[in-house]
Length: 310
Length: 316
Image (cartoon, rainbow over all chains, first blue to last red):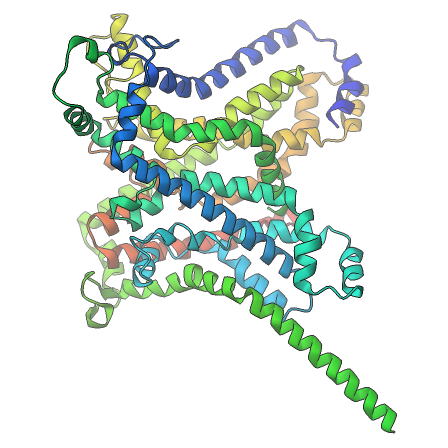
């Protein structure tokens, strides 16, 4: 489509002087905004690997100075961080897998007209998108279900996602029904049809659902804040938040655990509150930075599909 | 006779087979229905706590039933009324600013589309959508690295001897609403424009050709073709943001909250958290949650009705 527009318009698009000036401003604006969006991440990365002296003096703005990996070694020596990294990875993997399976299965099942009161149950699930009991009732419910300070509170509430189910259902409805009918003629049961025929065709939509769910799980912060008091269950996001607010105390503890034999040479790699904050920030953002460029088209597609359904 | 009876018997057997099969399908999805009940419907019964004086270790059965006491407290106690008033003002300000700037992504998309080089458009799109995929905690980490008293900006300005004392960007209550709006734009502008970019790509080229035949220049083509074509999308998004007027979410405001800016940063969602989890007034917080949820559903219904009336399409 884009090509078509170009061919159709290009000959008539001889630019006037005003348009040329506008064009230059336009490009400058977008370059500036893109810079503002990306530079902070670059700043965090170069500061986390630079000499902590130079970093603390505000000398590291464009390129790293005195590269060393001591910050990362020290930060991972903190027991809390490794546990939290494990929790965050676990909830991302388990949560995503279960959401994808549930979305695929329910999205398919709600297209099966034989199901008992299919329409009612479909609406029963979809309508939950539009109301919300609120934070405190949710907390009380989780407490009553013994899900506070329980790893599964990260997983269970996220499994049934009406929005994902709508996406998958719409997708399945676009598959020619003759395929399913032919399989039924051959005596295949509903589950066989789902497993052997429909599921493999769903791959693109499930990738979209999965990537959104994974980012959501990785980024989730509020649930730790509300449901968890046991530090063994803290997610990485929450730990980062506490580190930002308590980095001073933390740097002291790192220094103490590293031993008191400090000399001038060690100063460059000595942990400061700032170095710890930045290092942990980089650890938290890195998975997103790595994953994002490769999966951008899935994100965009997911948004488009969502828009169609409104 | 006998044949007909056998036929009827066979038919009814088929029918009951079908029904049994249909019920089996229902049983297969029932575990998921239970999850939906537990985490979407059951919490609604938590609203009952709004009518009791619930003090956590004591179970609800032994708590005192206080009727509408908490609801009355919101409007009768002057100090409480003032706090709630400020919270509502903050909520309205934040949502209002977001709605006022809701056309930014539209203009962003149109301006980006004016650039001819496709690789440049793609690059900008990738870079500017990135902040949307990081959590608010990380946004705060970025804010801290850039704008705290020992952050990049203050160091830079001090090293250049422009200022002698660090500027308190974060630990102050000046321009709190504006700062929150800017962080929201930083995070969401690029992503928000993607839908419009796709919309522009989908506009029928014949419309532009016709405009050119009529002698429209680039600017006039934007005014008379591009914008009218994108308006329906804009309208739907605007309606959705109006129906979410009270739901600012709390993550952004929670992470940026500190002792200095509480007054202007506390939106409804954050207030509910601060009151409920911070002060442990679970019943009072539930009462506010409940009102908020009811008003939100009401807004959604009204907005949907409006959309149906004016444009003939429902948004939900």
